[in-house]
Length: 351
Ligand code: IPM
Ligand code: MG
Image (tube, rainbow, N blue to C red; front, side, top):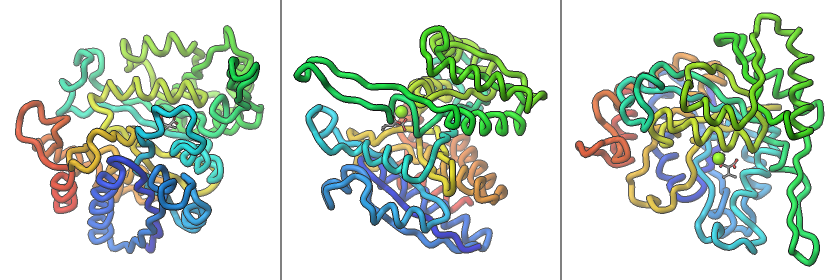
């Protein structure tokens, strides 16, 4: 198969972890007889520096003419501490999600048997966790009207959802649930927020189209608590943009490291695959970042391209590297650790 993949390395550790995913994908291409044409493009602070824009039109053109987008990370401390910055790297990510129609963000949370004791949570609570968050990605408070009034003394961000936006993410949630254990949790704040009441009402109406799916409705604050107490109680959790942002960071604690969690953003046409971690500027350029979240994101990409064996081969080699201790320092626990590039080389060699 000929694949054209847009490669958006972005900022911080982005380029380093993306390099390892490319090595792994190229090894997959060799083993399974594919040809991958990589299309590098600028995004984030790197794009702001080069062309003054975090998601340039040129990058968008490359994305839409590709089969998938593999993405590193976005963000730079130079902008974080400057609330007055007019152009910010994160705007590039949001613009890209919107322009590519990526309304659904799939974030699986699972544990690795060899790493179970890395989690700050007790083994008996988290063992066997296998859940997936479906986060709405192009609506809600991230994209509502925002601004200042009263001479800058009052600020506002608004959360808006249309019925159609809720229906399409709910549909995706029900479909995922049908392929898994047929259990879905709608996470909202319907005791306070009108948008949440629209969500709940919409899910309730759609339940009859999926009679096999057992649906529960829970408030986001309660889920935040139960998620780390009884993660095994959940399978598919569907929620709005901001709640999903927060809960998926929390969920990454279950697996023991944020450096392990992949994600897929899908929607109208092509998908974008990225680690859930950020640009981790403190580690940039040091060759110490954990590349596994990005490598596992590439596995999700192959899966969405209907190349299941390829995806499985990546997951297997990742498991093998973990159990053989070929890991970066975040997972080494005082034992020998490997550089980002060494982990990538090992994975590629063992594919
Ligand atoms: C994420 C990130 C982004 C988000 C930031 C970088 C804008 O935290 O993908 O979870 O909030 O969506
Ligand atoms: Mg986040």
